[in-house]
Amino acid sequence: MEKPYQIIKDDETLDDLLDGDLNILQKRAGYRFSIDAILLANFVGVPKVESIIELGTGCGIIPILLAHRTKINRIVGVEIQKDMAEMASRSVGLNDLSKRITIIHENINNLKGLFKAETFDIVFSNPPYRKVNSGRINPDYQKAIARHEIECSLQDTLTVARYLVKPKGKVYLIFPVVRLGDLMYNLRETMLEPKKLQIVYPNIKSQGKLVLVEASKGRGAGLKILEPIFTHNLNGDSNF
Image 1 (spheres, rainbow, N blue to C red):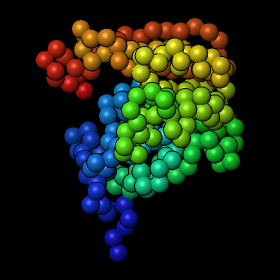
Image 2 (cartoon, helix red, strand yellow):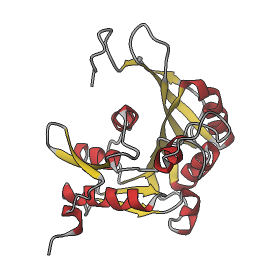
Image 3 (cartoon, rainbow, N blue to C red):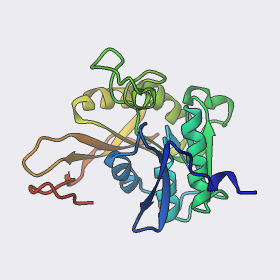
């Protein structure tokens, strides 16, 4: 009998990553990962840590990329949408990473019932970036949940991150530049101190679009601004 992770459903595509070293299942018409995920995966610093968790893992691309890049043995991805969590689990199996990556179908607000406080060295997330009352909500529910604060808010994400991360542990986030004020305010309110910040630009002549932030639990003030990232050159060619 064929194992579940070997099945590609009719509404899915199987895509190569890293020149075929990895494979990822995605929905044909639903939410698909974007450059945000690649940027966050590259930003997360994981020297000699034992356990990491992603809040809102989607198709599971970041845990898979980090497992490929590091030797971390405990990687958890939490996803509220059942079909996305199941698909992410199959992608984990396709890449023979089931012993290192666990995908959990759950609302992040319920994680206090699953994990003890201060369990993980690193927590990372690409949280929904639009408030419910801002802009048109996408009729595709997968895309709507990923983009709007429907099932969880920025404050929810940070509160759960602070609960899960160990003292002196790190929290990594990617968020729109236009909401940087909200992000920095909420980090301080949650007692997560911003330590590093990096602005992402579409090209050298554009305004900043995204911001990558590293915050830490239990460390003092002191913010380092890193060199900018330009995702494309002026010809429109990707730098990734």
